[in-house]
Image (cartoon, rainbow, N blue to C red; front, side, top):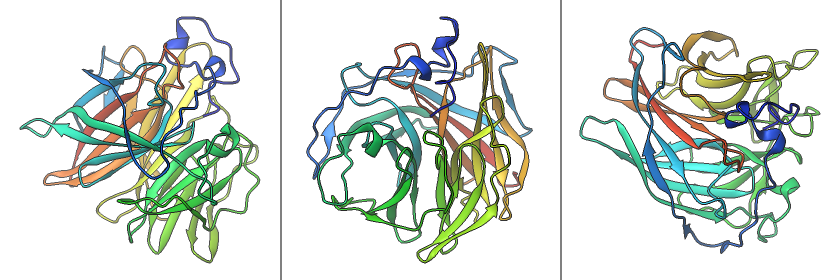
Length: 326
């Protein structure tokens, strides 16, 4: 989340890089034990002007939408996503869990998001999260057993909210990397891994965790990665079982905002760029990634965080990779 907070950029750049001036997320009380429908308009989007979007050979754009919701609703600040049985599962950096049904056309292209709804995340005592310092959710994972894990920054931790189909109101703490993350640069990447989960820090570092603890896969660099570097903002398991897909983001003042997708191996090494988004094409603050198996290979979904800013957008984009990729 910290990428844009360190800069005061020109008004034209705020449409893409406005975290620094984004207003505090409003708190709207939601029943902790149920889902609340949220109004949203869905608008189609493409990849914009060339050469803004670069796709590796055989990677195909498979549709995109802009999820528009009134400023007074909490359907903003979406920080990660996973896809479960055709449903989008997301978290917000204001402390909400979001769910909606993906809408695909007859060709399988993304055309919408139906029935968006949310529920307030809770503390371990079952009370709803109210303070920003408690609710800055940045990553989520669904384990092999179907449990929902959520990583938070500011108060860095990973909590288990139980079955993703029926999240519990009393989460439990699980193993978290033993590293002093910067206050606002935490575990943006979180994904299922063999026997547990994998966490990736925004400013560097990769860890594999099991219930008994975490081990370092890639040590954080010294110095830590800066905004001008490509930094991790999302992670999901390759449905083939061979590694992970990672989304990274870069910002260079005043308006050079970019996002890219790469494949990560078991040892944390990264493969070539598969997708890159930048000006003058469609680009925003992409923080979420999900990978889903398809008949022809893998579907990648990317989600952007609008930071509750009217000059940014909540974009959901889809891309198809062949079975031979990466």
